Length: 325
Image 1 (spheres, rainbow, N blue to C red):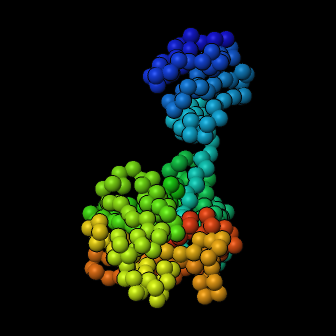
Image 2 (image 1 turned 30 degrees about the vertical axis):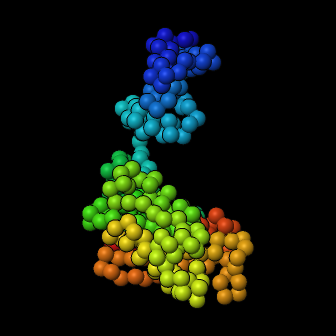
Image 3 (image 1 turned 90 degrees about the horizontal axis):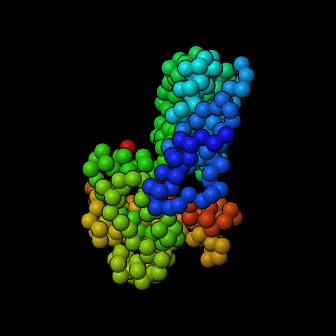
């Protein structure tokens, strides 16, 4: 049956967005007899809480993950707890690592992989390694009390290879470190074409520490805007330690920041050679103390151009993170 209050709410949400509700959305206001609404604060379609008979509870959600996750967290879990449906809590904490492979990480934490409660499981994706710690307890606090000592021990064992937990990203962690120091960052990018700047600006409030960047795809931009020495560029090549360091220094000087990162490399699929293969990348760093340094990386070029570019941007953030620590 149609619930008039739900229909009014849906229409109001469309009106607030300057739109008229399509007739097809009217069906979102229909509920089974005896059901109640599971509120959706993110979208128009509400969910349903329905107990058609004793010991059978049905909950429905819209298919949009962001909406479903918020509804589950804000309404469903409290409802289940209040009505005695929850007898055990399962809680997970994801530890995130960069600069170490999944296999190497698993070897270092091998003593924890056979635990029963909590359990520890390794994962890997897009160059990142992860450890998920999962515990069961009578309550959230009880499950958390099982996770925390294992998390603490693993972090102590892994050191700076562990960059964050759960929803942390390399960009958010770097942003927090720069904010704590009240320091600023600029970037100079060649093969990543703005990818590093994009990662930094996905973080809300990044304008407080990220001042901007120079995309120096052509060598003339490296010379004219970043003040890379043309003689060094000719002698060493654009993909070299010397040029990476001068690019970082040039960005730091041009934008007047405390720190600067640079990336220059061969993303492929063409352009490689026997001495400089596809996947070769140099990342430069200029520090507040006036130091200039660079690190050579060889990413697997056979995995494709996007893979090289993505790993380059994340590795640049990780390089800065370790120096900020």
